[in-house]
Image (cartoon, rainbow over all chains, first blue to last red; front, side, top):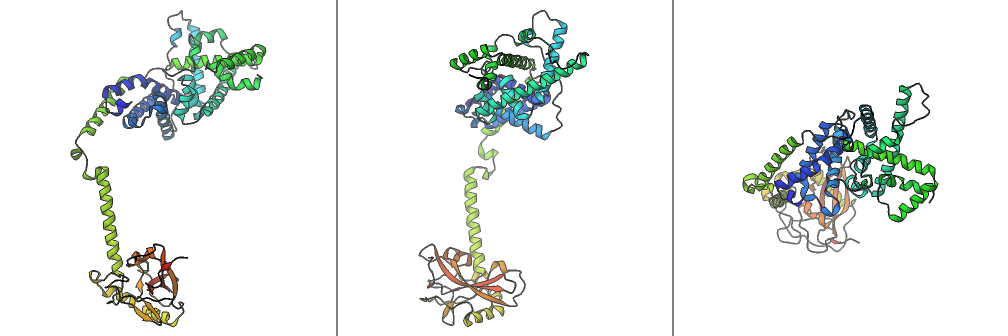
Length: 216
Length: 264
């Protein structure tokens, strides 16, 4: 970052290539719009050009600083354009852990549908809870870095995450409940998930023990 | 550990966050004996797995390369601009030092204009030095003060202001040679009334009264008087002419040297 502040072009390029995905995905999960997320990426790195000299390494990781800037940019854009359509489909890719195996078309469809349902549920969360969930669970940022990005105490991050996950679970259960009710004539009082634990465990893939670690 | 205590750590456990060996051991013991919490942890773990799948389904930025090129262009442009010689790229007053000097010069100019402006308001007098008096003057209802007010009513203030060209107006300098002359009204020595700048444009003076006030020494420059050596928190007496509408029209200083004293 010091090199960027000193006007080192290759250092800026390196910073962009290493970090633009984090910024892009954060903005994408927050807004649900690819084009808006790209605009946010551009805004963030323009601010980095101007304010790199103000970055203090002792006050948090670079990624937390970038996500903090991105958060402000996202909020400004959402404020500016309240008609932003957050639910446009981004044409998500299959998880990397599923690639290469025998693909059951029906299971793939169900998985895609479930991910889409989850994405809608995430984007329907109130912004403060969505921010925490995106940073901690989708970007796998530590509580400390998320707190720096959001400019709030670690305890607030934890409690918001706890609450966000509770809201998300409720939304997913409600969605599954209504989906089951619409698909069959079975009474909807049994909100059994569409897929069993084994299916979900397969989706989780390896490396779950690393969750809660540092953002790439 | 009971279920309520467990609640606080359930998300951390499901996310795989490191909560410490001892806490993890206690959580494990609780889970073995509590099917409800075990089910809850399992649900949170499923949610974590789903969120992980969602995170990995997010696409890359399709225009990342184009954005990178655009940003690099802007970066290079800014660096080129920053490395240009200051004289060529910036106006004269763009630097901080130049702006500071400009502010100082502007302050001096304003002070000079204020000095000249205050001199304009000072009445025409050829001067004898201000004498001193040991005690306070009479109250504002004193006949001497009333006579002075009458002179103001007759337009002496306006005459004094209008009669003297600004460049000829002497500065009022108390206690020095060249100070404005004073008048003796009763047993007081007073300067002539001067119109207050705020009285410009007010209706004509039909009647009024004089109010004796104390003016802080620090305010004297505002009326064209130099601050005399002495305590900075001193006060001087003055008569303020208040018109029929309650608005102050003019002011005169009374026994300027002798009444300057420390505020109690």
